Length: 253
Image 1 (cartoon, helix red, strand yellow):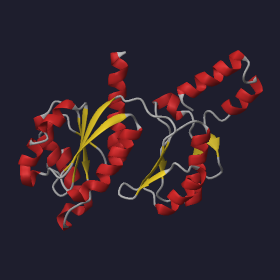
Image 2: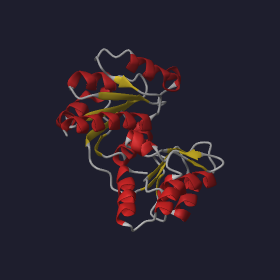
Image 3: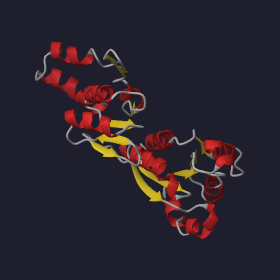
């Protein structure tokens, strides 16, 4: 339940448009709702400013749709990550406006346009990193960021990155995605004062060890202050960016 929906409910009770018993019935499921296979956290928006996100991997299409239906009933937007076409079909049966992105493997249902909190650049080294870029971009958009994609600007052709310097200087947070040796976040971190969130990807030949080489390279960055999330975790990077933007917005008010 969003703060706005809770205020509307309380106002409806105060004005007599909603009975106390009806409001109590809705508030009874405010902390969480037990669906048998999942306990949906409806209190998360009030605590963290963002609704629960559904991690689709390992869940059946019916389970994904059931959780999505519960979130929508309580006024939340829906974001499903690491999901598939079958789950998208199931969600579309309860929400015709559901959108499936096969590159990002996400499902989104937007019923309330999020407040724009700031601008985020999502930068990647190569086209092979695009699935992670799209997951990060869609998540950041759902959480209230104005997203600027800067793709295929890896260190093998540094002039491409320099051409994007103006964009990087103007955003509030930069998410930098790279596989192989993971050098790009260090370069970006040395170019700008903006917070940099690095995302190692599993892209690369054998010695990249499925993203371990990029992860270790980013953790060992010479550019101070670079934050690193898990391998291929575009969602986690966007969630971290949201916390930064939300804190900045709170400080401005």
